[in-house]
Length: 212
Ligand SMILES: [Zn+2]
Image (cartoon, rainbow, N blue to C red):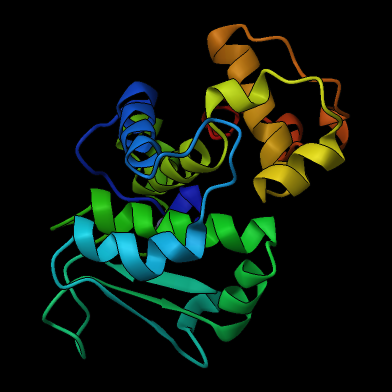
């Protein structure tokens, strides 16, 4: 689940915190900034090393229209450790290098790694009233973006199609990321049609504009 409006308050983490954490993970895997992040290897192997007792499973359905879900402190049927559930189509799409599914899986990994002892999937319009850095959904999505698209990878002149294929991300995620780095780090935009693909570009309002 990655709807920032449904985020809950969690201990604050800013972009730099999340960027440093993601960079440490990439560095431990000896990935340079232009290498695609190995999402399924991370799910199936590395997550066990980062969180004791971690497991994941494919389920045929999830409530509330979710495609994937994280239980950082274990699920009712799986109390022994943190768990991620996902629909089969999410795993299949990730195995085919589809950017949206890869982002979804890392978003859920972010919940497991960042949100112990937090009810991260409480339902309610809480997220809209929260500062982004205390919003569980913003934190998980930002963690995923930092893993998939390191800052240095955006310092590029390659066209959008080449970038999304190379990094295994969606056009929307790539363009949102480019706009975020332009706004926060004053980085020049790559030569991409960001206005066409960036959902953050189309959103109105202060809270929404902060979620990119
Ligand atoms: Zn979520």
